[in-house]
Length: 266
Image (tube, rainbow, N blue to C red; front, side, top):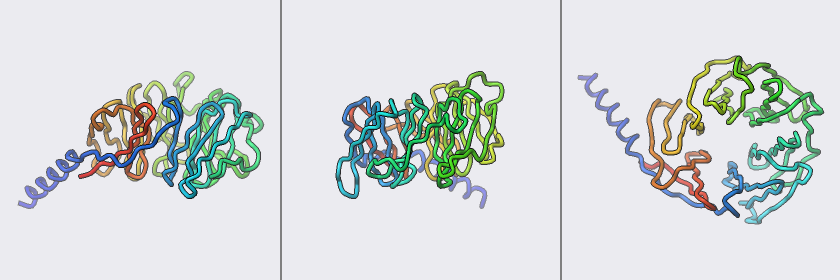
């Protein structure tokens, strides 16, 4: 009898998971549809294109804009928290720290001055003042200290026999490091850079993390890769095909010059 009731409970729980509905929470406007963008922990929208960055400050409601011509084209912008932003130029092999008014803190860092040949991927770390870098030429993963400007952990030939690996995504999740390559191979390391596993996801897949969940997505649906209820699938909201970010239970889709922010409701 107890087993029967437990089975009913599990079935009911799974059914409610699948019965979740998308609810539109808010929208953001982009200056044009080709802008790159990111949301920080204060729900501030950063937009960038070429060497120009803008953000609508949530505290003052002031629109801030800055350009960084010495960076050439900005490849990535990474909110480390509500007060610090990291920017990266693959073209110029430079990184820099900005404050929440988009002012450079100290001097920009030329990565070639610190032994890097060609950095092609950057990711923030949960450890303050640290970031992850991938040196393409040496297939090397590096944990880099921004304060001391030194490499504290290094793994050469990080992806084994993969020839000329191209990283699509590099990120930390629950104190472990994940790297998704363009060919769909996912490499999973602990923070000592010991490989935990290697799996094949497919070239069309993208990963998203939020709280205790790791999702894999294609253009139509999300599937839980790691979660308390592993393996559940959720179709995207009607008309949405471009999930760009997941943060604090909110799902950010871009359609043209607008970002649509949804939440899953029971």
